[in-house]
Amino acid sequence: SNNFKAINITTDQEIYTISGSQFTFSDDKIAGIVDNKNIKLWYLTTGKEIQTLTGHDKNIKSIKFSPDGKTLVSEGYDGVVNVWKLV
Image 1 (cartoon, rainbow, N blue to C red):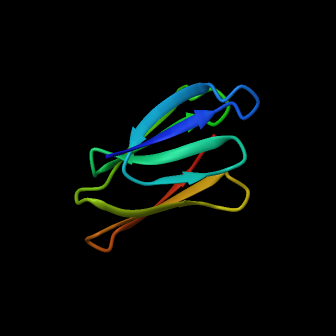
Image 2 (cartoon, rainbow, N blue to C red):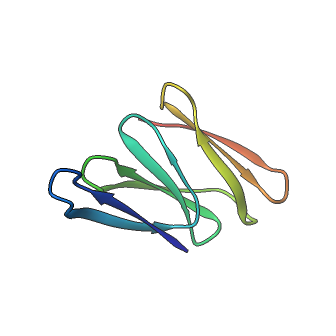
């Protein structure tokens, strides 16, 4: 597991820390793999958790937001690809 820390560049103070094993970013969200088989979404500005996405039976290999940030794609080590429409 890795940590992502958001730092205020003016004050050098930590804003929040989130844990996951791989992260991807959109304009307003962060997605990270947690517990190997789940994906969590957080608001980029606050670190507040939005939701958890479940649906992989095997460990997740990679995650990526679409350019518009409205879709997330995840690939498992078993070759299963999930396409998540986000609100």
